[in-house]
Image (cartoon, rainbow, N blue to C red; front, top):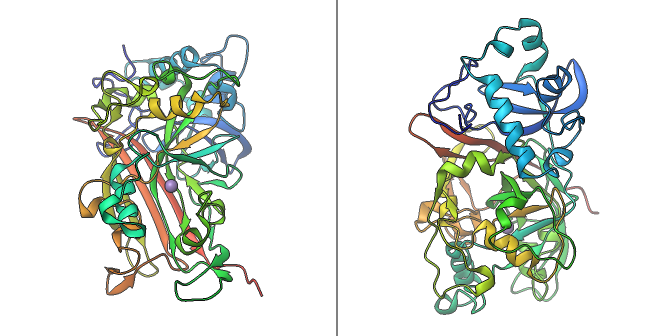
Length: 424
Ligand code: MN
C-alpha cells in the first residue's frame, strides 16, 4: 500500500491534529538523556522512532550492506537518491502499521526504538554546505517594493522573468530552540549624516519554507526543470531573521549581508516531498510565460497552511500571520532549474529557502516589516505595542498540509531573541 494512503493507521496513537501521522514520517536527528549519540529518527504521533535501532535489528536496510541512520546528519541517507528514500519510507510505514505485529508486539525492541519527543533533544538535521534565499512571493516583493521604492513600480522589471535570489550564509543556520543574539551592525537614520555601529533596533522575522537538496549536480551540468524533483529530498520551515535597519543601509548594490548572516532558524523535522505529494496544487498563473528553461506543466505548488506567532514576555503566544505556500509565484522546480542554469553545482544538504511567503490579504503578511508597515502601524498584543522584535520575544512558525482526517505537519521552528553583545 502507498505510504501516503489516507486509510493507513499506526499502532502508535496519533491524534487528529497531530503533525505526525503515519502518512508523514519526517526525518530528524536526535539524542536522548540515556544516549548522547546523535542518530536519525522519524516522528510518529508524540514519539520518535529510532531508525538506527531498526537498522541494527536488521529490519531496515534501504542501502544494502550499509548503515545510513547511525549518523549525526541525514546527508548519508539523502545522497543515495529517490529510490532509497522511497524504499526506506515504505519499510518504515509497514513497520508502524496497526496490523503489523513485527514491531508492535516486540516489547523489548519497542522499548529501544521509541522515545517520547518531549525527552528527545533535536539537533540540526542536515550538514548544510550552501544556503540560498529566493524572493519568490509576488505579494512580498510588491509590499517591500512599495515601501522602499515606488508603489507604482513596486515590482522591478526582472522579477516576472527571474526567480530572484541571493547566496545566504550556511554556517549560521540553527535548529529550532536556539536563541538568537540581536546583531550589532551599521545603521543610518535617514536624517543622520553618518552611520553608527550598534544593536539592531528593527529586528524582524521572515516566514519561509526551504527545500533540501538530496542529490546534487556536477559543476557545468544544470538540472532541468523537468528533472528537478529527483534532486529534492524534502522541506522544512525556515525563519530568515532580518535586521531591517542594517539591511536598508547595506543592501545596495549587492544585497543583504550582516542584516541576515547572524542566524537563520529551521524546524528539526524534514518532511519528504513524497509525503507532500498528495497536497500538490496549481500555483499562481504565470504571466508573462516563463522562458523555456523555466517552463513547466501540471500543478507545481503545495497546499501548506503556514502561521507565525509572537510570544512576548508574560503574554500568551499570539498568531500574527496566516498564509499558504501555494501563493508562491516561482515553484521549487523553477528555483532549482534557475539556480543551476548557469552551470552552478549544488551539493547534498544545500538549503534553498522560498523567500518570505506573504499572501494576498493584510493578515497574511510574513514579516513585521509588512505587518507594521515598517513600524508605522505597530501590533497591539495584550496592551503592549510591537513594531519589531524586542529582547526576550519569541517567534514561532508552524505549518501543515490538511487532509480530511489528518495533518502532514512540520512541527515548529522557535527562536527567542537575546540582548546584543556589548560593542563598547
Ligand atoms: Mn528571506
